[in-house]
Amino acid sequence: MNDKVIRLSPPQLLVVTFLFFIIVGMLLLKLPFATTESISWLDALFTTTSAMTVTGLVVVDTGSVFTLFGETVVMLLIQIGGLGIMSFAVLIFMMIGKKIGFKERLLLQQALNQTSVGGVIKLVQYLFVFSFIVEAFAVILLSFEWVPEFGWKRGLYVSLFHSISAFNNAGFSIWSDSLMGYMGSPIVNLTISILFIIGGIGFTVLVDLWKSTSIRKLSLHTKIMIVGTLIINFFAMMMFFLLEFNNPHTLGDLSLFDKLLGSYFQGVTPRTAGFNTLDYGNMESSTLLLTILLMFIGAGSASTGGGIKLTTFFVIVLSSLAFLREKKEIRIFRRTIDQNYIFKALAVCMISVLLVFGALFVLNITEKEASFLSILFEVVSAFGTVGLSMGLTASLTAIGKWVIIIVMFSGKLGPLTLAFSLSRPDKEKIRYPKEDILTG
Image (cartoon, rainbow, N blue to C red; front, side, top):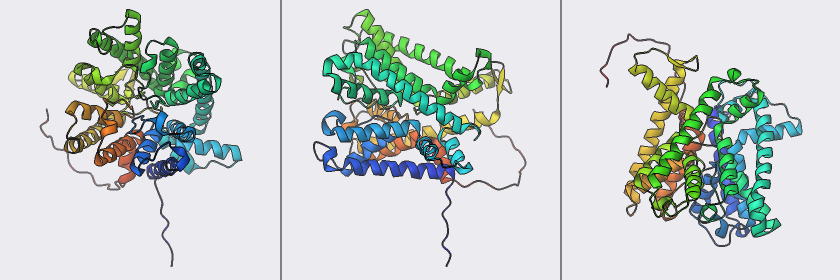
């Protein structure tokens, strides 16, 4: 009797591997010495999913509920989830001298969202070296703030935890109010924000910047990411400054310097970082709507962040402008964007909207006490693997927690990866005649 061998496609294997690490993390957090008090299996699962997907939404307070062992488990899951499971697997393979085959390269291509398998191993090597150097340097900078306050041992640990969390765009903090206690600290605000901006811009962009000898030789993706990041971050900062300027619960009572510093940090954090120095529960509705849009857009491809991705957003905007101008091609920086990427961008956006709408619909049924805006904020935060919240996470019902878990998982792996893992390739070769339909 021959047993059938289960063959998984790269997207399916990526999903299974992610689930495996989430379950292992859940089992570790349920150990008696991992927590200071008993937590439910669902809360343990929620925490590990949030850590592996580098989201940062929490149903229990990380700093008070988890012991040093529990916090270390969360920190390791953040590092693995942020840099990628398959990236760590390749690192282990290289350390033990095992040959990396074509299948592993395909998995890496899928995990890092690359267009080809060529150069993925080199990308992983750059990824690890760069990541560990940046995190180590950030620990040194943050220790100037936290070592004098907590002492050497505690100060260095706090610096390490927040460096890993920030670079991987996780948003986890050992304080229940995130970084609100350091709203006026330039060291904390600038170091943390630079970490998650670098982590969110994408590893392919960082490698391209490192290897290119001039701006002209940069790839189109890198140019769009750099220009797009500068534009959207500046726009978000100025809008936050204007919308919250007179709000006594956020910027209203602060000095001009602290207003600018607070506006800068809250302007750049929604695109998947998850840290906050001001209370989102007291912000203006207009600011919250802007934050929801930024969370939905997210970070860059092949980065530690989530969302539909900044390049996807810009491709959709550029294709809309091209249509309005009656142009048949999308041109930017003297380059033409292939039509296949336009279809991909539309598919990502459509699947993402449907996912958010479905979760929003269910949560509006289960979370009776919550406002529509707070539920929408929570769902988009989970999808964009951001971790910001208006205070709803801790009071979610059991069904609500399961919904957010699914959304975080989907947001991290990406809508297309999940869709491809569940679909079967269409081998139909038949072509049919075209016919026009009315749209718009």
